[in-house]
Length: 490
Ligand code: SIN
Image 1 (tube, helix red, strand yellow):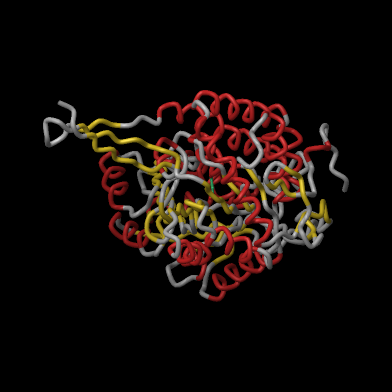
Image 2 (image 1 turned 90 degrees about the vertical axis):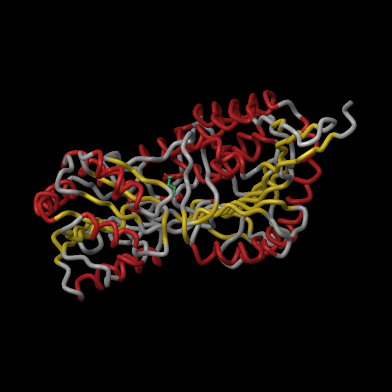
């Protein structure tokens, strides 16, 4: 299928390095594949350490002038970029659906979410205030500045091809830090399209570069990003395994890191929950992006008194989910991203079956669409011995655990090295407080399945990561404090 875009110039097959659209030094390329069809949409450069180094050096050259701009002038440019994204939302959504597979309506919503980071952080950077602190000596003044950290790098995943790049680039650029970004090999085209718009609105050369590479190139690009002394901060979203490796590599030059890593989100439904709210939330927390988000409900824990009614409603809901290619207007979920993703989901379902789980719906690939189109699946009888209770499934599978007491639910929910998001459904305010405080997670969704916003601090605890993205906390990661001790004030 050829992509029909109003502005075909948004679809690029070169990377954007230091203000220029370029090929790899070797001339090598790799295909970006539509997961719905297996067809190549574009060929993009296979870059490595040399191209990454040039992007970093370009960022360093751009750094001083970018940081010296008034915050309101950077904010103006970022606002223009957000507006440009919204004005081109149909094309950006089409590019995203083609490379990632999500339904086009959902892709368009992601474009708005992605653009909101530029708008919000541009405004927020006007409020990067310093401090004065009462000094312990009469002739002293203590002044604290908050200054941009310097050149930054970002590595982003394929599940949100537009919003993950902008969630990283927006706070960096807003406070005066250039960023070199490597998008996932499955979905580089959305990030490149954002770079086209960044160039058009006048973001200077070197301030925002995109280097591309496939899975084999990733260690070379990541290796340069984490070892180059010009880089002062890395922001990564992806697996815990890769996050640990990057953190270790960054330690050698003591770079600041922000890591948004794996989750294993518990979704707790108590007897006193509003069932309609819980079901509406499952629709988002399970079926958004076909379950391929770090905050997807992974362990659905339902109290005995409401268990059967909940299961019946989840099955009913899941029957309304339409699995189809993302460009089909009827689609509510598209394909999984690739074969390894499908293999993992299938392995989890097989394991659940083998351990006595009852598959009430789905459990395999869609008959008509085949490939990686996985059916909405509901399984009961889950416990913590199942693979899917211990690993992120990243697919449209709802596995329901039954629990009796509140303390059992909290214990099971916390029985994981991860701590990104947890969901909590109850109408009892005291219980919500108790459970909310007891859950070891960075984000608690209370009676809702949707928590993502530029205004909110997104991030996890334990092995789910370090730092926060979004909100005024998200800006701190791109700033350094500078303490100035002024003496001799008599
Ligand atoms: C993620 O899956 O990491 C991001 C989800 C979101 O921003 O909503």
